[in-house]
Every structure is written in C-alpha cells, then in structure tokens.
Image (cartoon, rainbow, N blue to C red; front, side):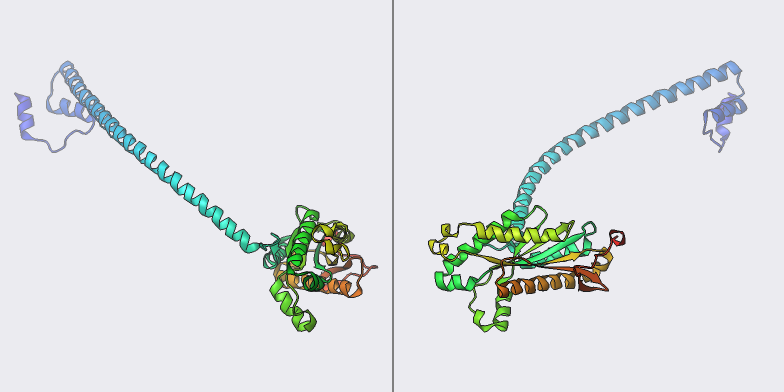
Length: 323
C-alpha cells in the first residue's frame, strides 16, 4: 500500500497537535476526506480513552496516598496532642514558678510590699515614659521613733508594727499608686554614718510611694495626710497592750513634680528618680526633727535637666508646653 511506503520512508517531523496530525494524514496518506475524518476521530477516541484511564488511575493513586497520609497525620496529631498537653502542663508549672520567684524577688517577704529596688525601677520607667499626667508625687513614710519600740518592747513587737503600718498604708493607696518598703540594709548603713546613735536601728521601718497622676499638687498632701491619719486612728493596743500608752505615729515627706514634657525626662529618668527620693527623704527627716503633726510637701519642676522648687507665687509650666 501507498501508506506503508510513506511510513517506511520515515519522516522525522512527528505531528505534535491534532491539527498537525490531520495535516500529516492529508499530505502523506492522501486518502478520501471521509476516511481521513474517520481516522482522525478513531485516533481521538483512543487518546480520549487512554487519558480517561490515566486520570482515573492517577485519582486512585492520589486517594490511596491521601488516605494513608491522613491516617498518619491523625496518629501524629494524637501523639502531638498528648505531648502538647504534657508540655503545656510543664510550661504552666514553670511559668507559675518563675512568676512566684519573680514576685518574691520583687517583694518584701514580711510586708508583701514591693521592695525598694523594684519601686525605683518602676519610678524610673514612669518618669521616662509618662506623657499624660499633670503632676506626680513621690513620698516617704517613716515610723516615728521606731528604735524606741524595738529597744523597749522587743523586735517581735517591732515586726508587728511594721506589718500593721504596711497594711494600713496599702489600704489607702489607689489602684494606680505604687507603695514599697524602703531598703533596710542601705538605709541602716546610711543612718549609722550620719548618726552613730541609730546604728542599732532595726531596718525596714520606712516606706515609699508614687502617686502617678494628680490634677493638682495639693492632692498629694491630702493622700499623705490620709496615710498619717490611718496610722494614728488605729487601735495599737490590739497589737500590744503597752502600745496604748505610746501609739504609733508616722512622719511623711512628699515631693510633687510638674511632669512637663516627656522629652525633658526621658534620658535623665534614673538620676531624676534618685533625686526625687532623696528630696522626699530630706523632707521626711525635717518633719521628724520638728516633731510636726502635718505633712511636709515640696513642689518641683524641671528646668534644663535640674529640679527647681516652685514657689507659691509661681505658676507651673502650661499644659500647652507638654508633648
């Protein structure tokens, strides 16, 4: 046949598409158009059938693989869930442990108040970041004549006094205020250098507080007065009957800072915090020296990085200057 001769001669150009196949048949086989159409249709049917079979086998293979993979994933998920539950349980335990240890490292074990180091960190952070407030206040509270209570009544009574004063102060603070117990070790060493008669003082009888947001400076005086009155109103004979004749009193020194612009505080926050605490400490000892029954208060503002006292006839920085 002619077709055998044509195929035998070979043609290196093989048709790649249906259109090319139809052209190849027309050029090389030269058969009637009806036979050409039937041949192309038959070839299409074969290709279509093989493609359908290939697709079906591919889907079966995919389904088989998917089924096996799904089973494996289900097993892995079950194992991971069990492991996650264990890991989560361990994680919660260690988180609670770390939180407990962190809290203990930040709090005085006797009074449960924030310790002085943590208070200083919080004060520094506040001064470096706070933008909203008008005034803030830093104060120190000292138990008047605490050395006498220790020497005359014993350290056990002294401990009860410290714990009760801490509780009374804690009851007076607002939710945003910070209350801490001053550092006993450094304070006692400081006192020993300044006054040898106080070297036997039992440390930890001083407390410090931060009032972060005050609309008016005089409100700090009211809060300090509330601290003082809460201690004076307490029935100290409940702690020890001998305290009826010598009830506990406290001295309070408070410094109020006009916050001004945060840019003025941001890079000197550490020095500023230490300066505020030192000034409050000085005021407290002035109150103690005068044996006064009122709060010693000072108003301050920042000027070129230095604290300047605001006098009664001087207005603080305007609200518009803050940013």
